[in-house]
Length: 167
Image (cartoon, rainbow, N blue to C red; front, side):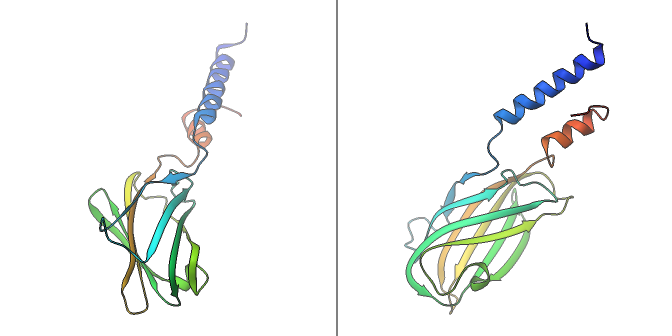
């Protein structure tokens, strides 16, 4: 019969493997809502992908927004606001042509990579993104939720709980 500490390690290892198998792939489609329901925006958003999902503090996260338009957009800006529960916590503005190839027409993807500080509180956040054209006309406005997880990686969490465990 194996010593107790080896049995404990095997159980932890088995448990960690089971959790890894059951975890989502690290990205998934995110539900998107338009800011003004029923408005016919010139830019239609077909999807948002957040990788990894949930976002990991202190590590890069990529936000990909798939969209399309019948317009020929040569200039514009993205205005991004982030709320933690009901509290506004962050704003930033980007040049549209820095986030995708200009001129924008047809189907396109806006991709932005951010590394959130390691002290960012875990929980649910809401991102609102407005795309404004050359003369500040609103081309689209969407909001979607994303989460920031508690641990950077499952194995690092398990190691912090059981420092003598070798995997």
